[in-house]
Image 1 (spheres, rainbow, N blue to C red):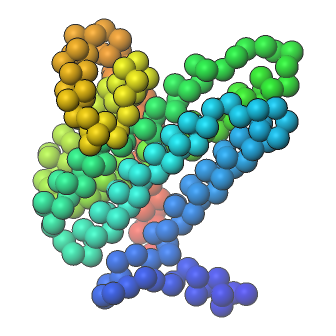
Image 2 (cartoon, rainbow, N blue to C red):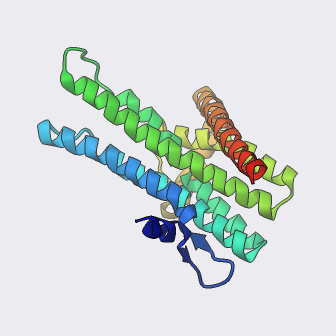
Length: 240
């Protein structure tokens, strides 16, 4: 058993040396997949005993995986092949278009019907929180990976600027989705609607509040994640 676990830990997908992807790099994805399945399980329980709340939750959870996988692959590719500026810029724009889907699920709690005497109220509370939590984890991990890519490819000042700009932009994306009822696919499907709603939202106070507050929330959560990861890295280096 120890040999199998050691092989699993050291197994690498490689077309070159050093490898592009190792199993160690896949661990966060596997853990997030387990959490995603847990959220879907809560929804299946809801369907079994009553009725589905909204199948768009499963779709939104899937959408939160798109920026995660985008950041995962571009981070690993640049780690192996170096400064691919054009590819990083394209990947970053694609990532930014879908990144708001991660914090967006926080707003699904607004659909919760409050009746403290019903068992389903408490089940729905836990279920919606689970979906929002997993989606938020996906977003934070994707932000960490894309930030690593920016730090590797661009100057520190540029990577920091991109990081700080992405936070309120994610909040603005949540506003476009929740209030303006738009989605990431509209960029390809009908970019004219995107432009029209952008112009209408510039002076909207609600857009400003959502952008700043969700940006602040993401920033604080990311700061905690960054501090934990960096402390672990430095602590391991000190031990070795």
